[in-house]
Image (cartoon, rainbow over all chains, first blue to last red):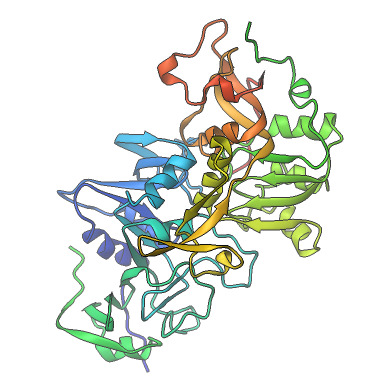
Length: 222
Length: 231
């Protein structure tokens, strides 16, 4: 079995950015989602939220212009866009838990066929939850950006998560290096396939049943 | 006359007792009140402490130093893991069973503090429903959705790092160094602040005040605070 090429991490972020609506408030989780802040969104203004108290995060500053008092939730230096605001932690989570964040783009260890999300602990390290459960329970919509399989080739999209859950039945859309999939009541539907990737390639790297949408398309990045 | 300024960090930390619950402001490498922590270690004998903070320390200053002193019994935080290139004493203490850990989702952590500040004993949130962090907690259905009961989290002491203070105890913060500061200042019985600047003898513009002075007990002016190494 040959490995299909698939998208780079950067291109997964680029594909997910294409779906963000104009004038939306979006939280970016750790991992591939953080790359979304640097993606072009022509004709759309999107405000990125960070749970340590920022709305309107811009791209990272040039080297030498970092401000130790201006970081995101991944503890990386950031900039502010026009219209940005600063607030304290409780308000940041009022925005999340109160349903004011339109989309949370999150990374994951595993997603189940019914949209269960496992992204906070693999039981191997000291457990640290951060804002993962608040985002999963509170954002209006949760979408996951991740590699389709682990480094060892094990499926990350599974019938049932074996890692501890972050929240049950919250994921609506999954972007991977191989495909774009939606979680619907009947299961997982493949909407788009990466260039050079066939449906069988995706199925053989997935731990649950997939269906191919009749109107499926190739992933386009521009 | 209101004057919440004290002469030194030593004077600021006077009276912190054994067994105190101590909230420590900061998020990752930002806004850790390092001088107040140093004063607590150098000028009090308080031990058997419970530390409440978002993280379990960055490196061996600040919370890292507090943990390494062996005077902390328990830490309540959302994210005790740290960047691999920025080790801290927590991991070793935890693996040796020398410190107790309570992991709380970040938004629930700040809301539990806010509840304590506001005189609210508990509240229900959908966060953690269906996960191991909800085990043993009361669950109730509101509007068709399950919610978990969370209790208020009060503190005896809060250690805060502010950008600017006036003698009335009003505070401002700088950018994302605000994080848990305003909520912790409200949630503790004794709120101790180190401020990089003062507006003495003038007050801070009332429209610019982030933490009103009613929540602040003592302020020490630390014009050049130590920073945690974050590179």
